[in-house]
Length: 426
Image 1: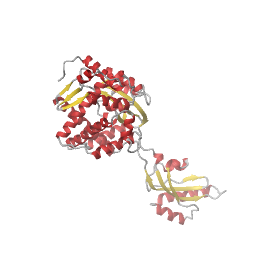
Image 2 (image 1 turned 135 degrees about the vertical axis):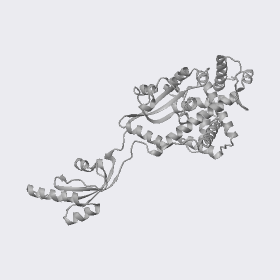
Image 3 (image 1 turned 90 degrees about the vertical axis):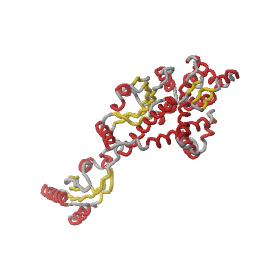
Image 4 (image 1 turned 60 degrees about the horizontal axis):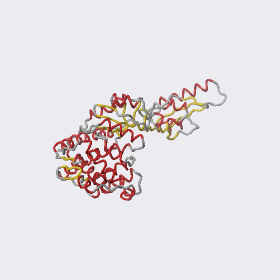
């Protein structure tokens, strides 16, 4: 339910009150009393003071300019966020979800680490920036309560199947050698005819390009599933982005921010933070433990001596079954060099040895390798493969699970909002 006040008049009135409040000018008492209630959410009240404090927080955290024009632009979405938070807290209370002081303290420590603050400086740092710690803690409380609620409600519903993991791995395998992008996004799909999503998107782009913090803007304004992570969707491939976004990202350099992109999900603003080539393990980074049998060729000896030593080296490569056998054979053949070559990365070997051992598995032998002073036959005693750029099955499963949880959470909040009594007074 909404009072019959024209949208533009509501917009200008509240923007004026907030701007006067934050810039330090006292608005008339009559105007303050008239606009004391910003919104009623079921049985809860959001005051203009609540909205004022949250706008302060958003502007500082997002590195937005502290001007009246900024307040005019951000307060409608800030109020919507406050309404959603009240709905989340009400639903959590209805279902007996408890947020403990330990939960809040842990969230504070996480914020300190994320922002590289000294331990225990959370409240002091906020006050130094002109932000009330209470408004940040209230936001934390809503986020924690909602996370607990969603986890409890959908734990038995959210399931990631083996086939889904296999499909994700198959897509990654198909894209080996192709560019992979690290992207942040802001999605604007606001169910309010009074909000011009395209115009809002353009304003956000302008502020982002002027130095506003992308992750802070995404947390406050994005309606997408990635809002909670500051818009970070992680590493992704071109085919996962969709045609509209993929066409833009090809033209971008790391750090660039796109113009608003119209997609089936609403308007999107993206930032390309990094680009790389998706690949499997680098075989040159494999670690190998090697043993050899070395057979020297006497100086100034003829072709017969070389052929004889080569024949013996070939016999070694066809006879040895283990690294212990290499020790025995080296002793029997009076090899003048030690058998143990140690553990090295394949890429650290000389080109001749690297080519010979690169494709071998544990327990396999090279053919005789011609060196300047003789022949060497080498066995791989142990091989440790490097980590792949491709994520493992557990990591993929966790990503898919998080996406499903967020999808259910958005639907859940939409249903709660639809059934709630919301009376916006400004």
